[in-house]
Image (cartoon, rainbow, N blue to C red; front, side):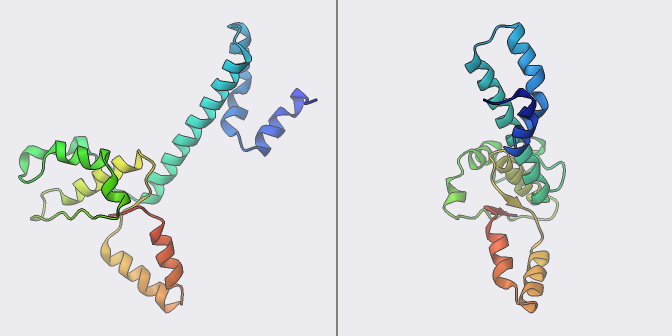
Length: 167
C-alpha cells in the first residue's frame, strides 16, 4: 500500500509537477467541500493538463522567435486593399492549407504590414500548438550553408522540417 509521505517523490518521478505543487491545497479543498474521490482526481488531472498546455505554448513561443506585438487584432485592415480581417481569421481557424503543405505569399509595398500579418498568422497558429519558426530567408540560407560546410546539411534540414510553419 502506498504511503502518503512518498507522494512528493512519486509525483516527481512521474513528472507531474503541477500536481506536486498543488495537491495539498486541492486535497484540503476536497475534504472541506466533501468531494467524491473521482472529482478530486479529475481536478488534479485538469490542473496538470492545463499546466502542460501552458508550458508547451510558452516553449513554442520562445522557439518561434516571433517578434513581439504582431497580433492579428492589432493590424489595421482598413488601411490596405486585397485582404480582410475575415479572410485572415479563416486562414488561422481552418488550417487545412497548412497540413496540406500550401503556402501563403504576401506581396506589397514596404510598410504595409506584410511581416505583421505573417507574424499574426504565426501567433494564432501557436495558440493551436502548431510549431512555428520566424526568420529571415538570409539567415536560413546562411544557416544551411554553414551546415553544408560542416557536413550537417541533412540534420539542419531535418531540424527545419520539424516546424509546420516557416515565416
